[in-house]
Image (cartoon, rainbow, N blue to C red; front, side):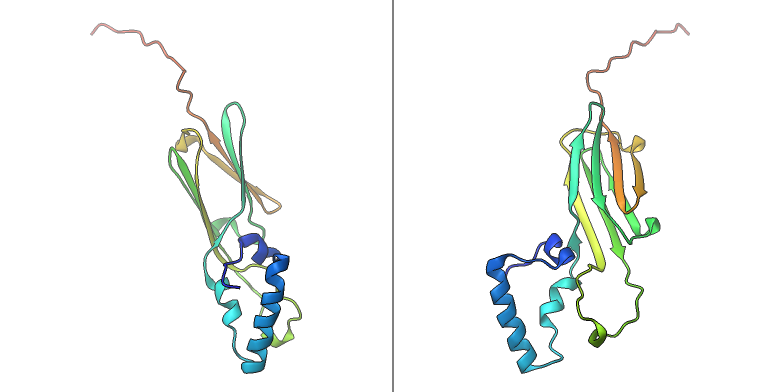
Length: 155
């Protein structure tokens, strides 16, 4: 199983059926060769990529992602006119030893995602809210067709 598992596969503990047999064989070999060998966990130390929904309304581009278990102060949003980057870290606060786990499927650690936006937005007017683990970022589109008339004043 040389292919990196997706964030969803790591988050849920799922894998493709054809990879499952390879994974079982790899796991058996590592358990027989050295019980302290945790090379199969090594990929978990990398920064994960967030899964997102991006859609538009007539006036806004909306980005949604699940950030359950992350404190708002541990989230960083960087917004430009044509892209947004969401970065954060999910901290594990448990102090349970590894040998006491039966199953360990939750993702803990750093994550990020950079999204190129389909339309130009106004970064100054962006709003971000989190409710029940769902982060919603509202990015107002720039109306390029909007025209304003300005009166000329005499000085």
